[in-house]
Length: 135
Image 1 (cartoon, rainbow, N blue to C red):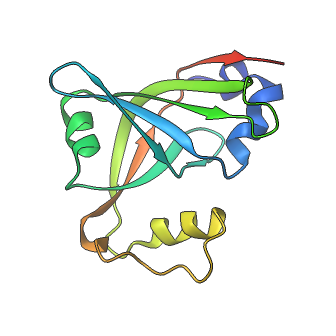
Image 2 (cartoon, one colour):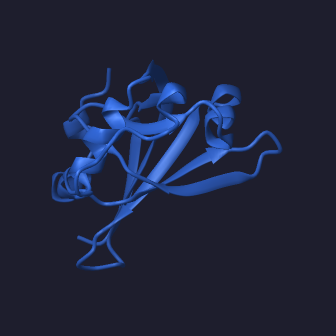
């Protein structure tokens, strides 16, 4: 297992702790990249995203577990952190509990489980490499 202190530069760690939108990239079956803004939670070791099993990004990750995302510093849009890794686990979330947790993190008032909760999963991403810009 990689020591996250060696992978994530300390000056950029706050970008993972803030409720910023991650621009998550996966690889489509035709080899093209697919990028979407996503809510996320970094637990100090792995990154978690809420998603459903019915969408393209989920299917992409079933064929190719490679994934990467970037977060941009809201105070300086030229400063960002890119995180690269792989899908390591898919955790069923049929009550939408993780969706609600993320909705609270991102400031949604009175969040409720979404209508698609039955298809909800937590995508768990390893943190293997980072790149950055800015200081």
